[in-house]
Length: 368
Length: 86
Image (cartoon, rainbow over all chains, first blue to last red; front, side, top):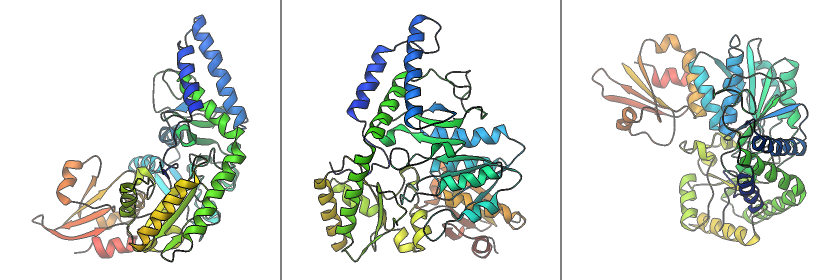
């Protein structure tokens, strides 16, 4: 099946599914239970969590397991804001995922002041802009690591350093970065991720936080694995997350090289078509190639391809109601490109045959 | 004169426009401004038949008849010139 929407979600790896089912079968008890069976579950869970921390290279960090990155983003933003109520200013950007934009909107309506880092001509954060925006009453800087529409890798480690020097907490939405490109997760105070973005199941994510960093919970119900997220620990989902992380760390170089080769092939084949322009620039991760078919509406192209059994999107699924890509416009300053862009997202599972089908279809579409 | 603004919580363009409206609060205070949310005020939004681009400003006369419609992100100056004028 020619599927090119891996940035939206990935299929669960069979080995991950197996780990999930086995954990669900073998560790029935609540890890917080005081009886022996509970302690067995807890020991298994702790071992899986240690595996995740080790493989992600986390130092003095704690993982708050959530239902996914949307919850993690909400917890980070509202959790910090509510913990530091005397500070009512937040710095972010206008290329964030809807699960960052929405809590920011919520806080703005509650009286918070917001500022947005500008982008430079390459679509990356202008770090001088960030420096100038941080104030005495800034409680948080929240920035995305990889733009989900264009794939552009943002200088978040440098941005976090600026925030740290000014004594402000930094949250990074690393949902499109983890498992795809190198990222120093220890550079941030808070990091969101979602396991279904790297071949794990939907329904689990995490918020990595500095040990001791206090947040006000979104879900109240008493301490579970941590004091900021109540609910029975999802042992089987954590086991699945650990397996998914084990697989991508074990196979990182081969997966990356395969995706890079697919991206190069696409650029080579589509670069010959005059009405196609590439929006992803040299800062893009190879997993995402955003391009515009000049004169063809984004949503109509997505539907046209879907009717031919080829699946991709124009933009992040969660902001699909907007008619144009803000990210593409930020880079190109061109409305025609921003309304005709599509996002092709690639995987180590993408085959040459699938790629040929996509190339042929896009040639037909542009000739249409 | 009444202005209806239709926006959504997840929409970055709406977020920045809300910020600009706050900067223009002295001007907007002279109008009856109703802010509707695309997802949470579905019944109220439905009669206005909005498209894919947000936010949408609909300026109504005293009888509730639509005078003009401005679609998409606007700068503070554009909001003054296109939306909040008699």
